[in-house]
Structures are given as structure tokens and as C-alpha cells.
Length: 182
Image (cartoon, rainbow, N blue to C red; front, side, top):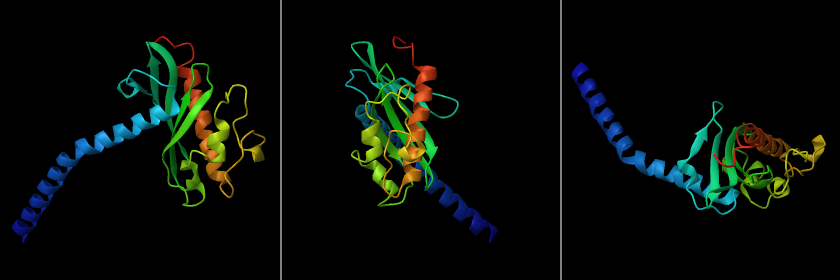
């Protein structure tokens, strides 16, 4: 019995290791493609490869710098926050002066048909946050005295998204301002 069980464990371990080795590179390539697409969507046009020059902070936030002709044209900042259904990971693009250029939802666990509407580029919070600078605008839902409309029946998700935008701005403010020529 011991030998049979040991043999089964050995075969299963070898299969698991093989599957991991075979799928590791395609999974990493897929994740990199997703990040590059998000960077392209949230920053002005660039000629460098921002994903090759990423800074990861202690809190897990990541900063990607976009350049055109050697000049910084924007920053893409990836942050995570807690939504209604679980973690919400977004990427927020800023121009060098701190204005939100665009946003992208990388991953979420929100309720389909409600909070999951956040993925749509035309949902209220994503549209209304564009062109706003968190230093001069109140980036929170109107219910909380802010300038942004919540997704109908998904105030918690909208709050989480805007909390993520504000967190990304804090990362920008503390790590990117006055660093345009890095």
C-alpha cells in the first residue's frame, strides 16, 4: 500500500510540475499583454515600453512611466482596493500635472449586472473622473459630497473604484510629481 501510494504521489507530482512548466510562460505573456493593453488605454500615446520600467511599491501599487521622445507624457498606476464582491484592481492614468487621463479595470469580483458595469468604459464613474485632477476636484460619489455619480444600485462598487482612483493619486503625488525626467 505504501509503495502504491508513493508511486501515485510521484506520478501526480511529476504531472503537476510538467503542467506548471508548460503553462508558466503563456500565462506570464497573457498577463503582460493585459498590463500593456491597460497602460495603452490609460495614458497618452508613448514610444517606450512602460511595462519594462515598472516600480513596485511596498503596498503593492505599481507605477509605469510613459514617454514620448524621452519626455514623460503620463503615468499608469495600478492599485487594488476592496469592492462589494472582493478585490478590485484598477489602473489609473495621469498626465504629468496629475489630471486623470483615463482608467481601466484590471480585475474585479463584483456582482454581474450591477457592480460589474464598472468594466464598461461608459459607466458614470469612469467617464466622470476623466479630466479631473484629484488635487482640485472631490473624487467621491455625489452621496458623499463628491462630484461623481455612482453606478445605479452599486454605490459600494462606485465608492471602491473612486477610493482606488484616490489611492492611485496618492501614489502619483508621493512618487511621480517632480520626477518627470527620471
